[in-house]
Image 1 (tube, rainbow, N blue to C red):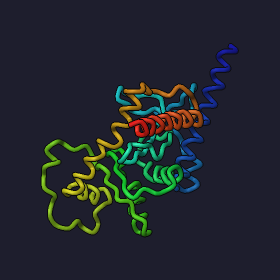
Image 2: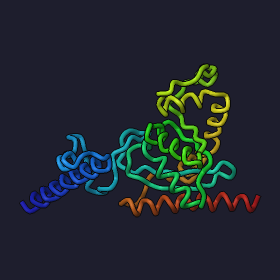
Image 3: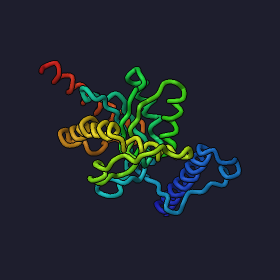
Image 4: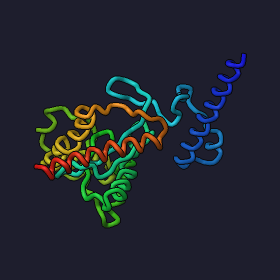
Amino acid sequence: MQRRESRLKKIRAAQRALEERERQSAEKAGKPRTEVQQAKPADKEQYNFTDPESRLMKGSDGLVQGYNAQAAVEPVLQLIVGQSVTPAANDKQQIEPMVQVIEQQSGQRPVGLLADSGYCSEKNLEYLAAIGQSGDPIDAYIATGKQKHDEYHQPCPRGPLPRNATQVERMKRKLQTKVGRVIYATRKTIVEPVFGQIKQARGFRQFLLRGLAKVRGEWALVCLTHNILKLHRLCNA
């Protein structure tokens, strides 16, 4: 009976945590106060008792309980110039926080940006467009979806885009140009090797700690190690 009561207590606490998480999400989305107060978690929403701050995410081997590790890499030496960890299940809203992280950790805002289709969303692209209007643009090339091999060889459509074209449509046209295709193709030689070196060469495939703060510290240490090894090889070349 004592074990049953303790389990029920944990389940009720988990339910309250899910409801609070949903209210915070509704408030962040700018919903009216009444909707925020009445926000309820979906039936499929889950809570992890071992690490409540982690989230269920899609991985290469299916669904995993974990975190979303971010890293920005400069193109010359493959040094990591910005890193962070978020509990967000995808990258649809991660451009703005990552630009801020890069500026904070490297001391300057990037002038160019390459990202895969996971970062393609109206919110991310609208943020970049707003930066461009402020006079300090970032020349971004973000894949709008997975492309088939023959798409790279198709000519760019002629004629101007309609005035009401979405940011995603504008980015798609930008990537269809000869310059856009060439620039975006360099991404596979900049950031992809870094993740390969961290995962395959150094065997880092899962976090050993629990809790967002500790996981962020662990990822920061991994990225710092990567940079030290790169600089060591450069100095001894």
